[in-house]
Every structure is written in C-alpha cells, then in structure tokens.
Picture (cartoon, rainbow, N blue to C red):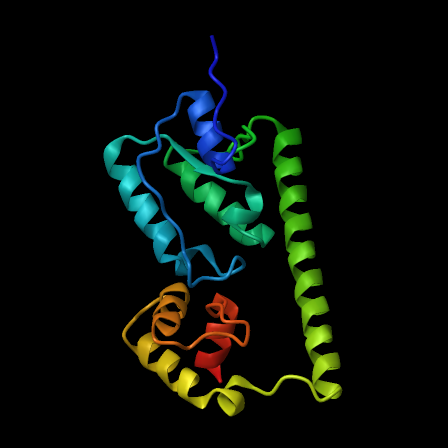
Length: 194
C-alpha cells in the first residue's frame, strides 16, 4: 500500500521519497546568479567534493532552471557530473545526464534555452518597468533614501554574510522595507553595489 506524501513538501523531497532516495545533504549557491559560470559556484564545488568521496550517485534538483539558467552553464555542469558517474535528476524524474538518447539531450538543451530566454525576458521587463517608474519620479536609490541601511548592509557584506543573511540581520536591527518586511536579496545586492 502506498502512503500519500504530504502536499507541503518541496517537489524534490516528494520525488526523493516516492523514488526511495535518501536525501543526505543540501547544496546551494545563494550569492551566485543562475547564469554565473559553473566554476564560480562554491556550493557546486562543495557538492562535487562531497559526492566524489561518499558514493553518492544521484544529485537531485527541483528542475533544470534551479540548476542553471544558461545553456552553456547547464551543459558544463551536466558534463562535470557525468564524468564522475553521477546522475542529475529533476523532481519530475528526468535524468539530465542521460546521453545515450539524443532526443533527451536535445530536450534538456531546449528546456535550458527556454529557461535562459525566460530569464532574459523577465530581466528586461523589470528593467523597463524601473526605468518607467524613475521617469515618473518614482523610487530614489537606496543610498539616497536609506543611507544608514546601506552602510549597515555594506558592513555586514564585508563580514562575508550572504545577501539573505544580511537581509535577516538588517530586519533584526529594524532596517525593513516601507511595508515592514525584510529586504529581498536583490535589494540587498543593490545596496551593496550602490
């Protein structure tokens, strides 16, 4: 008898449980953009070190867009895992490292191309919206509107904290958005780069 899995579990956890896989560790690159080169990802390097030493043969990602949003980056990551005999699986059960079936390879690359396209389209739309807002006298830069928050964010960044951790620390110290919520990672990144 199959027991239904809780609906609140993330997709990759549900897939792992249903496929009988044990999740032994988690890796991510929180301060790395989805299109950054694979060799610049400390989380990916740590994952390679871990799986190379403990017999893990499957790496599970939610979907191809959570692995990489540029086809070249995606392919380099897949090749890197494939050379080590490690399968890269999605939470839908797709084996991204399958190379014997040309159809699967091209479908993986097409999915990666669409992810890259969608990301570029979204970035362009957001940039255009910001530009329109600024032309209408919209938001002021954080350095101008919240100089104390920007200074604190830069100080925390100097201590090596991730954008998410900086956001948490800022919120703990009362530095929140106009709606009383912690700053998004992207907002923290803008503060630090201002």
